[in-house]
Image 1: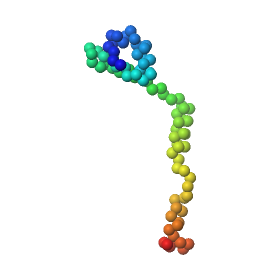
Image 2 (image 1 turned 120 degrees about the vertical axis):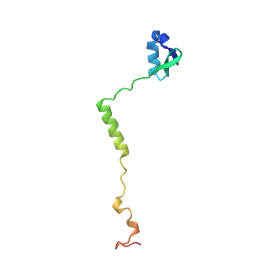
Image 3 (image 1 turned 180 degrees about the vertical axis):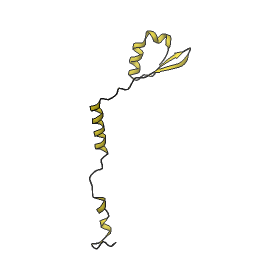
Length: 83
C-alpha cells in the first residue's frame, strides 16, 4: 500500500495496524517512496532464549551409534591383518 505522508497523518493508527499485520506500507512524498512502515521484532526474554538454544542443541546432537574406533573392524581378522 502506498500513501502520501499528508494522508498518513490522519490514518497513522490504522497504518501501524496494517504494518504489524504484514502489509507493505510505504509513505510517499511528492509521489516518490520516502519511508516504509515495518513492525519491530520483539526481543525474547532470557528464559525463552535459553529454551530455544537447548532445543537447538538437542536437535543437533549426533545419534548414538557404533564407536568410530570400531566401525571398520569387519575389514580385519582376529590378528589385526586385512582380510
